[in-house]
Image (cartoon, rainbow, N blue to C red):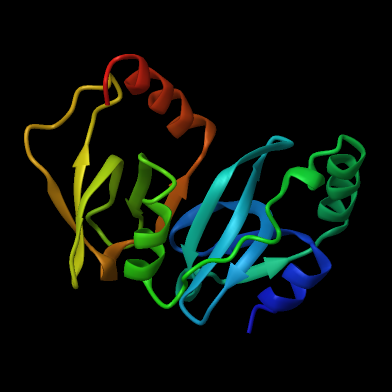
Length: 179
């Protein structure tokens, strides 16, 4: 449908559009895909910015434009393409299997519900993985932990991010101040 396997094989820098969810494209390298999920090495302003996982059903278009080709050349010249984990393997049967895998290496993550009327952005740590969702302990922008956990249903999650600059800054803060 979106030729993710081909883009992964060619190591294309792609632009992904999600009509009705995001007015901006997402740029990245495809690391893995299934019928349900796609894992990207997210690229933002010529920086590798962690892993981003998106629901395939939300994706309206994937393109490799002349701009993408040129920007990939710049990333190669800067040696950044060599840092992209193309050989990584992911458990992409569903959100449950993927989050179960990611939580082993990433203590903090961002989970988002971008579709529908009730949008949600949560940054924090996974407390429990259930058959229907993730019990998640989240914190505010001022690094204040919420008093209780929230249950994020798999069916509502549209995006997961780990290892991003945003998450890593908070991670370092909590490591210095006892996560």
